[in-house]
Image (cartoon, rainbow, N blue to C red; front, side):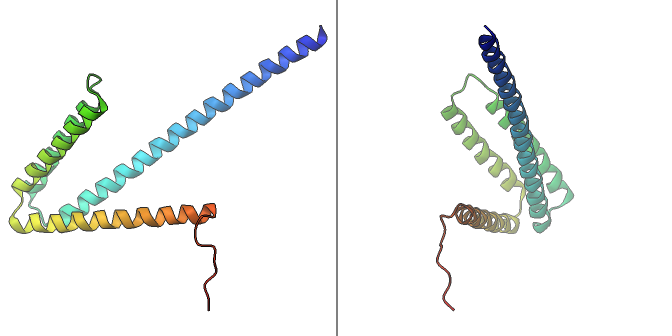
Length: 153
C-alpha cells in the first residue's frame, strides 16, 4: 500500500512540475514573440521615416502618406481577423490591398520621388536579402554545417 501511495505522489509531483515548465515555457515564448514583433515594428518605423526623409516629402505629402498607411493597417487587420476567409483568400486580399496602397502612395509623389522610392525599396530588399543570407550562414556555422576547412595562408 505504501508503495502505491509513493508511486501516486511521484506521479502527481511530476505532472505538477511538467505543468509549471509548460506554463513558464509558453510565457517566455510569448514574450519572445512580442519582443520580436516590437523589434520588427521599430525597424519598420525607422525604414518608413528614413524613406520619408530621403524623398524630401512636403508636410502635406507626409500627412497624406500617414493616412494611407493608417488606413492600410486597419484594412489589413480587418482581413486578418476575418474568420470567414480562408488563408488563401486572405493572401489574395492582402496582395490586392498592398497594390492599392502602393498606387495610393505613388499618386501623391512626384515623378522624381517615385523613382527615388523605387530605388530605395530595391536597396532595402537587397539589404534584407543579404542580412538574411548572412544570418543563415552564421546559423550554419554555429551548428557546424558551414565551411570547416581553415583558410590557407
